[in-house]
Length: 555
Image (cartoon, rainbow, N blue to C red; front, side):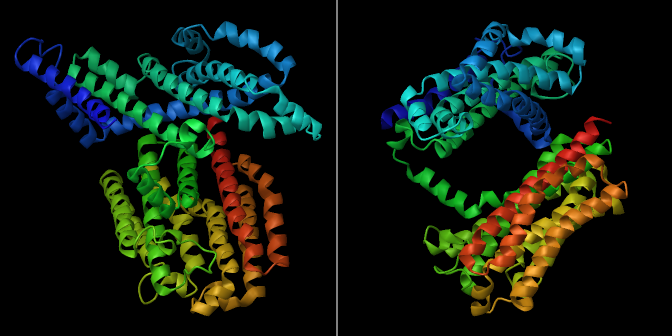
């Protein structure tokens, strides 16, 4: 086994070495077959200039949108076809007839209908992925043993229950296989689609390099496609492992030290909290798009920088909460990696500094593109993240936590994202950021409501401990109410489009949370409020950004 692993590593290196040798000895024409050394120099130039990331991000955006439009509905339709003979009889002949058609052959027809813009590229991916996924998911459901459905029906399961409790869980391995096939096919297809009528994207870079006979750039683009495909496979394999842990093919594979180490850090970084960093960036980008300016590459960099600063804040906060004694085995909060001894305090602190460094490096690049305004926003954001729990006057320990979170994860992030896209700041944009600012502050306050008694014991002064239980409850009501009231005001003022009012569908969840806070005071009873307030932030923020984006599309 060890020998085979070394062969797997050496075989591509051997191929590259033979290729280099053949060119240097003149066996291969350097014009037609540039040596790997030259190709990697070119690839490095594309990386340093940022062009390769920009083109890849544009192609991945098209793939992602295409898969959302085609792959996600295909999973639902495939499940429906699997459990309903009527749906299968109606849809399967159409899917089976269209599936064998080379999807690139559909591109001229789609261009005739939609033109050469983004819509034709995204729809081509969507149509292509739909039929591949729908047939594979249907086959996965049909392979489920019939007695599982019979048992569910005997316990009174209705068709909808069969969908959620039998068809979906049992077909998850097949669904994941379909997603992997669909994403791989989409990556292959987008390169070909971008050969036609595109002026950006990795396929365009490859085709443009061919047209000017820059073969080294062309091969560098192909290497980038290969690396993206490999990375997508790795990420989807990990997602499959998380979603389908019961598969015997994976259950008996013992995790190596590296994978265990990665999982330990993954949990310490608390990626589930990153919605607080993602939503404001998406909102700022959607507002910029609504105003006619959107650079996908800069938006992606802003998103990555925001997540890096959030990760650094999480780690640094865990370190100082642990060293101050706020996190202890009896507390319901985070900090588990330190409490379990998975990582040392020094490792957590260094990890936080590294994350801040990554975020700062991305920020400096954005500064070079957009100007010093982003520099100062970034500096204050990093300082706020660090001194949230650090220093003699830690913000979280002196009643300023909600205020800091409201400012920096609301207006600062939305305005910063908007500025990166447009190089302008206006008062209406600040007002447009208020709803997500109120909600992200509500997440922190829900945490402080739960920990009110524990924080008093360890001497941590939060607004909840200062105001007392009744006053803290009122603050929670005001933050939730302020979310919807501020949105209504900016819509009435004409700042936000009326489509953003789709967020009212989250109102039942908000009211349910308010009722729980009003009736409960025990930490365990309030624990769901924290999680569900974060869900409310995610749902409301996603719909708010979608409302701006939808208004942009219908302009």
